[in-house]
Length: 270
Image (spheres, one colour):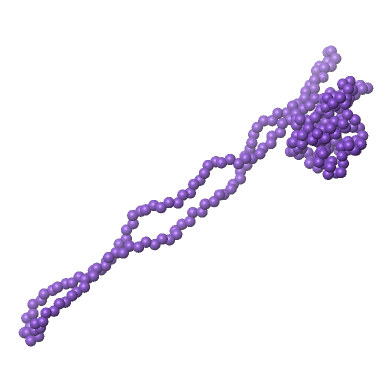
């Protein structure tokens, strides 16, 4: 399988990191993506002032104005990012990279006076120069390409935590009437008078005063209360997971090629 290396330039680290994440989400391997910045150069013991730095990194076919743009962008805090992709996946990768404020190297070179306008018109964009997303090439002796960039949206679904309500568990005291039956015992004095007709009892008469006391008793109900634990209410949270299908629409730019042939011939669309 043939591979191509795409070189893109970004003015900020944030744009480069976003492009990198979207490449990985689209299925491109993170091991094939590399970033060149002031930090990565310093960790590798290299500096922007080294002669031929960009030619060593990206090959000898890098133009001088391209190398200068790379160096100035990184020096001002920008990032140069490369990704190695199969040749057939170059348009897909470029479509992802171009939507994140990628720097047009030729336009930047013109702004800095590194490239004359007539040279820019005759210059052929390279895949490694990050300026071609889709190209139509003529078959004449001099090759010329015109750039038509195609963008594609991707659906990124994330998660956020929201409150759906509150469950309040409150403990409080209520009262209810109850009743119990109990048997109570009472003892009272009972006085019974009986007639005595036996003559022998006349011999046993006691004329002294005498008092007999009888203690009367009665049981009363005594109420006391005791408490015991009869139930436990356990309060906690139980988590469940469910799968939700998120539906939306994404936009994708496509290209239609219409070839106009000689008079009398039918037109074809692809």
